[in-house]
Amino acid sequence: MSQIDPPSVDPPSIDPPSIDPGQSVITGSTRLYAIIGDPIRQVGSPRVFNPIMARNKVDAVLVPMRIAAADLAAAVAGLKAIGNLDGLIVTIPHKMAMMALVDEVGATGRLVGAINAVRRGKDGRWAGDMFDGRGCVRGLKDQGDDPAGRSALLAGAGGGGSAVACALAEAGVKRLTVCDIDRAKAERLARVVAGGFPAVAVAVGPSPAESPRGYDLVVNCTPMGMKPDDPPPVDLDALAPGMTVIDIVLKQEPTPLLAAAASRGCHTMNGHRMLQGQAMEVARFFGFG
Amino acid sequence: MSQIDPPSVDPPSIDPPSIDPGQSVITGSTRLYAIIGDPIRQVGSPRVFNPIMARNKVDAVLVPMRIAAADLAAAVAGLKAIGNLDGLIVTIPHKMAMMALVDEVGATGRLVGAINAVRRGKDGRWAGDMFDGRGCVRGLKDQGDDPAGRSALLAGAGGGGSAVACALAEAGVKRLTVCDIDRAKAERLARVVAGGFPAVAVAVGPSPAESPRGYDLVVNCTPMGMKPDDPPPVDLDALAPGMTVIDIVLKQEPTPLLAAAASRGCHTMNGHRMLQGQAMEVARFFGFG
Image (cartoon, rainbow over all chains, first blue to last red; front, side):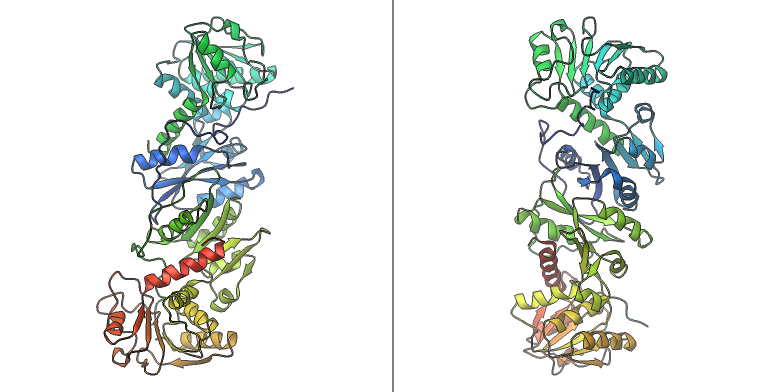
């Protein structure tokens, strides 16, 4: 059985904490951002970005747009013709297909092979990049857990895992081990990271049995933990004080992985923190925040 | 000199009175409406429609979209691919071109030769119609001035004048005289109205000298009154108590026509009232309000 991609960074109808309900009053001069995906009802980005814009007195709103995979090219051609639309957040199923619809793709997006935000430049050209992983790194730095010089064990080499792997490499981890039930997928990601960041010692580990022993950072980018009876993505007994454990799975309550990590004295970071970090990175890419 | 088209129903940065600033909080489930035009900054529709939706607990927002005339077809093709976009308000310069981009056009739109609102039906087909004139009629009815059975003098046979002429005929005026500096334009509109509404006695009058004497309703659909030194669109001395005088020109203060009408004991209705009436008609067409 192949591991499925981790959940989108947009949570299923869970609002990230500490969200202010404000949004800019829409007038004729209001500029637009949109999140495009299918399905779309579950996305959290409007409630994350609109308060950021309102707080920063940016006369703009972010709205959801449901666009089917088959309609992406026509829809994006239409959206580019809207003069006051400045950027898009891209979610499932469009993160890979969007690559072909922009004029330039940043280094992380090229490495990951997918982008999750695009913006219109002053010259009218559209640029995209991948921020799913940078949000993880920003969240870690914000809580005093800079990945630079540390070792990381990554479970899950799907879309989210790829983004996190590249971001951790970009942030200067010295060693990275990638695990996936689909070993070929892990090997492919390891080659990508090794090619992009020669200073990082990249390895492929077994899954799901790889032990976190000896790692500084343990990151779950598999969907294990979404359902109550999921097996743990790593050996929980090997978690030890001094480690930082990150879970991409978005839940109101701590996932079994994070609960076990906390009880064993590890630092933890949940998917909401990562989403907030990602929003800050995308807001900066969009030119506000 | 040919008379220019009257101003769009979207006022130049003037907010219609009694607007409540509320708007629905945007989430992943929020549905979309847009006003499309070029320029777009001056449109008032977002501040008219968003409070209506918020008051009626409709989880939707209306946003402005600047779309150049040359991009209309591509942009509309893209907008139709957005699954949660349910309707568009159409303003200058797209009211005529939009006719070709929908699946069906209502009777008023076909008569006027232009549409200002389109919606997606349950069957996925897009339907459009023209509400610029119906807003005038609704405003009149709301203030107790039902046009049915009355006679009307209309100055201005451009886009707005055409919409108002058809709406007055639809509302049952018994006699309608159309005036325009461009007499051929007035004759064309008179033929359209006579063809669509055989029960109405339609005539063409001189312009700008036609006297309001003997008419129940006097409607200015020319831009005369926007600038302080504009000549009056009709003979002000012929205004008399019992008449109702309507001015499409959007100004904060009464236009010279409305000021003269009020001082002579006429009922009056300004462009803001018409805009509010139009918003109510479009809101009903969209399925809320």
